[in-house]
Length: 350
Image 1 (cartoon, rainbow, N blue to C red):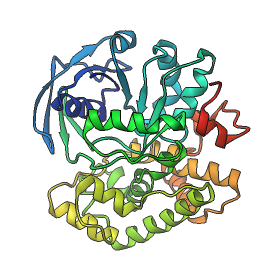
Image 2: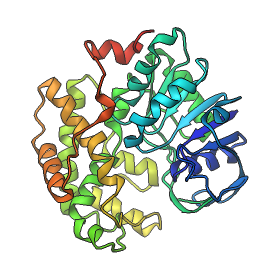
Image 3: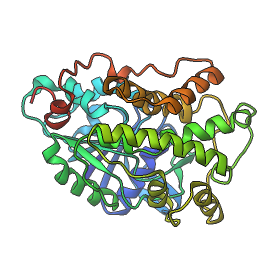
Image 4: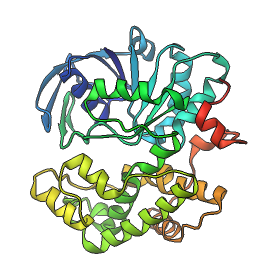
């Protein structure tokens, strides 16, 4: 297939390499232009995927979308509010879009922007990204892990099986079908794991130290992760949903046996799949995963009357440590959700 990858940080090029390794033609576009600076006609990957894979660079969004059969949006969630309107304006109505990860209600926000188009292709929300990735240099990425499975939902919900088959063809991982795009928004393990790791290692982050994040996933931090997981699961159940556990998510990403979280972290480290945690306060572990993860849970919980005291406390402490408001989620601004269930099922204006 012809795949347009929108986003050229670490995940976009990694996804491009993975799709190209499976025989697909890939074009890569950077919203700012900085992500593709210094890149040429290939991407080099190391780690779980090794090799040199062809791609084409697009200088404009319109160029990236021209001739594409499917598009993948792979940018941090905090870029969605500014970028989704650009994509909605440029994207052909017949072109399906996959969003990875589908943070908060980003697929629904995209649908709202296209509500006046009439019939249009579905939008799919992936719970997380096809791979983990670190950018090493322009045109070079390290891929510590390729996920075995990633939950996927769609708007309209009935199109999820077709989009799941599309994602599997592109990236190779299984795509368990979720009932609506709220499920992937709750199923992503990163908001919980990353927030706790940032909280427990804030002085290392502030001092710019190198620290192996899975080796420092200790028994104590694991207990806090499990407390947040229990509240998230209760919220999901209140919405009629079930989400995979943190242990299952780590298993899908790394292949280590399911078990206690700190034991899985040690196994990931021992297997050479660990990565260093962030070394600067301006890290997506906080700036993305709190507003579009934990704070989104609190937004939804307030609407549903579900208490989340541990989650509330973690967000409050992180706000104090980082000295900023971490609850503002621009994706939710302007969404008039009189009937959230209907919008998640059918979209807006279909």
